[in-house]
Amino acid sequence: MSGAQKTKAEQGREKTNPYAEWLGPDEIEDLIQGFYGTRVLQFDRPTAEHMLRYNTGNRRVSKRKVDRLAQQMSSGEFENTGEPIIFSAEGVLNNGQHRLEAVVQSEAIVDMDVRFGIPRKAFTKTDTGTVRTGGDVLTIAGVSHGSQISQAVRLLILYERGLPESVRDFVSNDEIARGFERWSDITEATERVQAYNFPKGVKTTPLFAVAYLAARSSGKAKIGEWLETLSSGLTANKEHPAYQLRERLMRGMEAAAGSREGLIERFALMIKSWNLFRKGEHVPMRDFRWKASGKSAEPFPSVTGAKL
Image 1 (tube, one colour):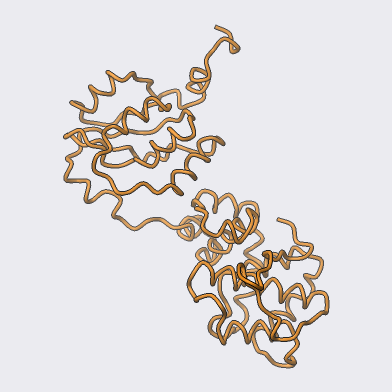
Image 2 (image 1 turned 135 degrees about the horizontal axis):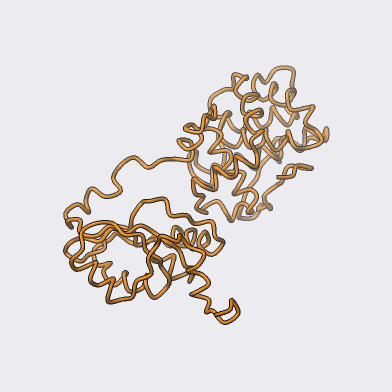
């Protein structure tokens, strides 16, 4: 049969792991009802829908997680990590509902390990270990300051997607690892920020991201002066953009610290401060603000001249 004559499903199956098995509904039923062990299977939408019939005792599905997995499957970025879909001996899906829902949503064809025959009571111990973070991934790869860099890379990914709308987007560890490959010179910006003694509340994730973006702009020669003023507050008047940023960060902002809104407000203010400083401009302290909504809402700023 020629490639043109093959169905989309047949062509998709040829691109998956050659060791993965393609099974029909009756064969899947036999495994769920009486097999103990692990098989590597190919999944398409009907297969996933069939298996989801056994999803009778799981937590609520996270649409955001399903959307992200579906996007990875559609783009070909999804990989079988060896973490299995798990069916209990009692015929209940113990683990894997988000991946199965993503197969249904994306209509992609992927391969995944499937573990059969585990006691249902083991469900309470599934996925209860410490989740590996993006910082763990970079640190294991030997990246210094892996935690700070991974958080900054995540913020840069959201910045590239478009803030503030993207602030609630899911960013996978794999995306953080690939982002670091693109922007590996962020380690230099991180080291530069770490060299200064900033007051509490100033040296946060957005500062690493802005320092990196500034290093990719035409004003990069001024970064040291901006960071020095932001750190010490010395030799600066009340109209200096770095001094204004320092005061705003130390004395509080509109959004609550630790919230997503607080994160992007800090990020926006840091960008505004850097842009003003780089151009030799200033604004009155009362106007040095940024809000995503309300009467004084503004678009999210970008670092002038910086390209990711």
